Image 1 (cartoon, rainbow, N blue to C red):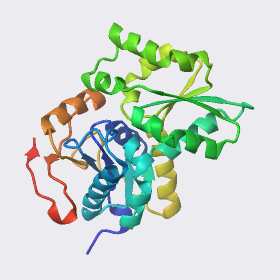
Image 2 (cartoon, rainbow, N blue to C red; image 1 turned 90 degrees about the vertical axis):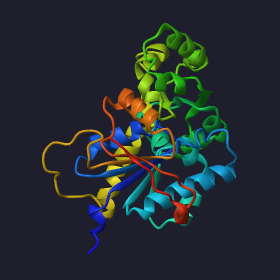
Image 3 (cartoon, rainbow, N blue to C red; image 1 turned 45 degrees about the horizontal axis):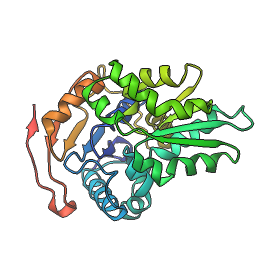
Image 4 (cartoon, one colour; image 1 turned 45 degrees about the vertical axis):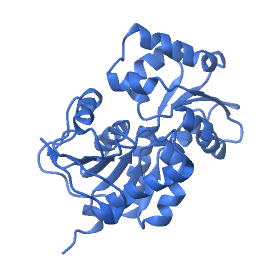
Length: 292
């Protein structure tokens, strides 16, 4: 007999490792749930790809996760969230949540006391160019002013663990100076890597600016949606849960060892179950090897 829907895991996919910050936020808020994570590390970055290519990759990733039996899909990749959510929803009959809408709505929520709030957005250049965060914020607020800045070097700095080096502060100063001059009320961290650099970003933009972690906002919306749809698992997991324990399964499409190393930097631990696979569409999934 198949598991009832509320006992199924939640699927998460990202173009690489950045979505681990979304996984952490979900894990923290949903200790009763199990997660399946797919990092498409063979095809990262998505930000340089065409719309058609991003949609194809996103659909392949989504169909792979759906084939494993999930009750909800979280698209932790900002580029895929900006460009491919309609295509994903058209292909799989599962609830799909992206990271951009929740991040934009949270920024409006925390600045609701301002007559004309100023909201900064930092993201990859592709996400900034898509205008997706600006559109999400302006759907939620008719008066918010949005100022965006691409910060591409933040991604490799986060993956290398350069969170306190003088060079990182210098780069942050270059990126954030223009937004800081506009005296923002809130700043959206519009890339899943950026929470790793939270302290650098906060000290550079100013301690009075509210930072919005899109992954945390997404996790809060997933909690509410699971309750609304009756999909939350009511049964507590026996014993204490920890990040990357053997209740969660991680897949990558390349460079499993590097993924494990970056997971150690981001989460303080490595996945108990990490499997290398190839994803070329649901009927062409080839098995890989488990990395212990």
